[in-house]
Length: 526
Image (cartoon, rainbow, N blue to C red; front, side, top):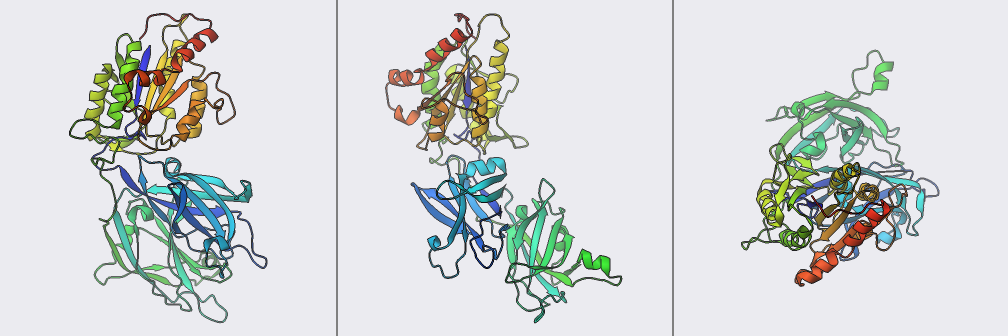
């Protein structure tokens, strides 16, 4: 029998890092095809972000209102601390603003989307339909959430003004504001910041504003930034004045009373008019790049971490490894176990891995006995960094590849058991369901041990005891291969009680597989 320990470094399988158990995440929100609740015009939507606290939704923040707009691109960003060891449920709710309303529920509800922060971080860009309170779709309404980890704590503060901008209002001048955009991975321009509107002037002076440097240019001071200037209209039909492109490096020349000027260009006017020069000038009066020392990075060495190793040398993960490992290792002959971690940044380049040897030997990830696993786990913790998302599918597919090779043998020689120790957080549920359904055809089982006090509903769902597990496409698992055990229920229980729960389904799973294949299991194991 080959036994693999998916030693999830930190529930999310993350690992302990000397620095990052909490990271700041910035989320940008756009919506499309929202319901039109207004009679004489379109909806005036705004988005409210809630997080779940002890079963109740608590408001965190909200965006500005997009006037007369069914496809809003909100300028206000949501910033949330991402705790890798927690399941953080978020609710994005859209409302149509009623200027007479004093309570949130008095605004017209346009739909909502609920998920975990881990799912958003995992996908980076998430596009989902909006759902009404009755569970039905909110028409064709949808929401797009783009997340970026604020791993770079540099910030940029800009002070800008305009001069001789084009006059757009018939009875007045213009009401100008600026938008800053950066290019995404799909090469599309994405809104980063929108300034306030300065009323009735062609020579505006905007208030200084500060944004994370990574939000503005991904931390690359030579990356192109597009700046657009508009004339604000109350009906939402804002008039385009002009645009220009620049970089932080160029804007940073505005220092010590030295200003940097950019021609604000309207391409359509430029094509039509031979003597066209510009539609005004945008002036960078000051550009300062600094460090934000207020960001909360957390401390993985604090006792609140499930991976915290106290002076006595133990923690929840280590206790689970020893307790459960001692039970399962008796079913392996050579006691050599490949121990893998997932969801961590590894030295020296700190790239995220969802499938790494905790002894840092990828060609020989085997540890001798449970004690060897525990030693490798304890030794690796100071050298890796907690990191999301928590993806189960890669580690399941890793073991499945070995199990698939066993099918090529004429006689059954091996049965694989994957032990995953986790805090219950999972970011790739659809992919994991697919992986388990495919693995159900192979000589393998999965035992999931939940540590900590989190909500293990997702793990219980994967267990498949209540109903047959189905893949994302509807394919059913040919047999149940998952057993979930919440370690907290057996933390102080006798070894025999824990063993009974851990092994409750494994013998039947093994027997069922060999019967389906018409193969008698051999006594030899590997």
